[in-house]
Image (cartoon, rainbow, N blue to C red; front, top):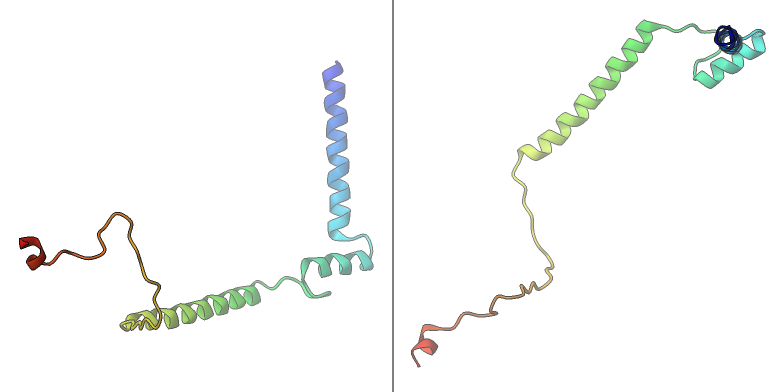
Length: 106
């Protein structure tokens, strides 16, 4: 019997929290609705328009494709690199110069 009572209390608490969430989301007054819309980034008084959302998404994808095409066109050409300054490299363990054949015969 005790677990049944605690389950009922838990279900009542969950129902209460869901009711509070519903009141906050829908807004009990016009002021609450405008605040919720402002927080969601939607202009006040305009319902969600799926065709506008789809158009904006398609425009964004088109813009990204154009940017990607510009980047790919830059890499289609051969890259030319000119080294203007270089740091002298020293590799540890290798001799700095090879002995000449004339020096080896002596």
